[in-house]
Image 1: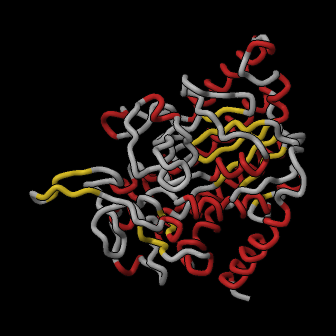
Image 2 (image 1 turned 90 degrees about the horizontal axis):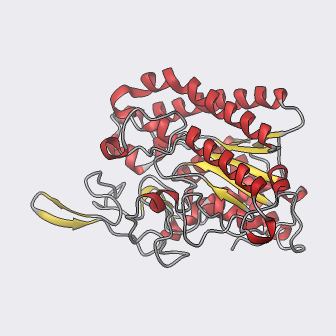
Image 3 (image 1 turned 90 degrees about the vertical axis):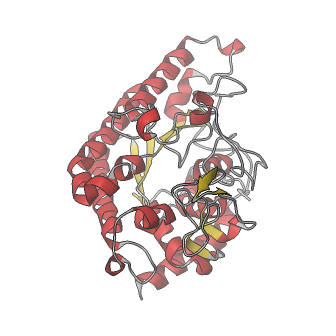
Length: 381
C-alpha cells in the first residue's frame, strides 16, 4: 500500500468515524480549560488587541466580520475548544469582553519561540515571544490564586491541573529570515527553538500543568507565499508543486522536536507530552485537495495576481496598493471552502477543520491521544 493510499484511507476513516463520536453526550471532559501558546496559526485576537488594525475579508466565513484571526473563519484552536465543549479562547491581551473561566490564549500573530532581536516596526516580528507568553501565563496563575472566586471571571485555582496546554509556534523562527540565510542558516539555531519549547513545558509543569500538546511545523514549501518569495528552481519542485528542499528542512526540524518531546516526556513521567504531526495532514491536503472535498492546494483564496498561486508580496490579503501605477486590491475568492490556503500564509477554516478532525482522532499524535477517551466530543460543524 502506498503512503498516499494509506493517508487517504486514514483521513476517510476519521471523517466517517468522528461525526459518530461527537455529540454522544453532553459536557463531560477531563479538560476544563485550554491555555494556548502560539503565533498567527492560533491567535484569536491577541495581536490586534495590542495593535488594532484588522480589516476584512478576514473572518468572512464564520464570524462575518474580522475576528482577530488570520483566516476566513475558525482556527484549529477554535475547533478544539468547540469539540471539548468550552467557549472560544479569549486573548490574554484583550481587555474588553474577555472571559477566562475556561482558559486563555497567549498567541499573537508573528510571534516566535526565541526572543526577537528586532522590532515589530522594522521586520514585523511580534514582541510577544514564547518567553513573554510564559510570563503572562505565570501572572495569570498568580492572579487566579489571589482572586476572590465569588467576584471574578477567572477560573478556580485547581483549573491549572485540569487543563490542556497547546503549542502551535515556531513557524516564524523558521521562515522570517529564510530567504536571506537559507535552510542551512536556519538549521543552526533550530535546536535552540526546540530547547525553548521543552523548557517552557517544564515551567508549566511546575505551575501544575499535566497535559501538553505540541503541533509540529507545517510544510512551508507548499505555501503560496513561500513558493513566490523563496529562491528555488523548477528542479526543487515535486510533482505536486511543493519545494522539496524547504519541506525537507521542516521534516528535519520536526524530527528534532519529536525527539526533544520524547526526552521531556521521560523527565516528567506523570504528565502527558504529546507531539502532533499536523505536517503530514497538511501535506496531504496540499497534495490531494480534491480527495478531501477541496479544490485548490497551492493557490491562495485571498490575494492578488491570479495564476498558479494568486499571491503578490506587494499587496497582502485585504490591502490596496499601487503597483506599476495602478491601484490594486487583494480580494478574497467567493468559495474559501474549496481552498487549503486562505491568504498564502494561513489555512482556511475548511482546512483547519480537517486538521482538527485528525488531531481529535489521535492517530497523528505521539503517543496516540484519541480525544474521545478524555471528552464527550461535541459537534464542530
